[in-house]
Image (cartoon, rainbow, N blue to C red; front, side):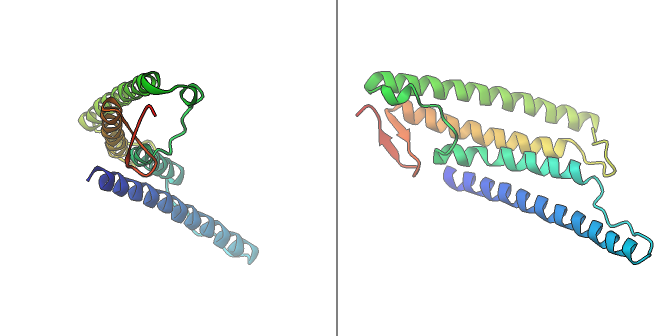
Length: 178
């Protein structure tokens, strides 16, 4: 069930990237259209996307944070395993567990801070400074959701490691310490 939730979050992340593509293409098309109108001696029209950079920034943040849990569950995060590849048995298990606990602690701290920021932004009614006043609690809430899913994924991984298994790239538990 967790893999399915992570997968849906990854699909939402991909849709955010597609939305960025569409918005940028609309903006470029509007500029080309105005360039043609200027070349023909015509007046320009307002063919821009208001607050494009700001909205694309929010979509990029959403895509980044929503993809975290799925990439962790699939084992495709960048990992520095220089030390781990030289360890076997209990030493490897201990290092894996320590690294997983540290990552979980960092993710929980980030999620806690983002949750507090969402509540403050909601309470004060903070909006963006661009032409389109976006309530800041909305993109922050999506980031909080992504961090929350990452915390669940890291907790799942930590439990698997503590039980003597490590989540492989395929998602299947693999015995450790061979």
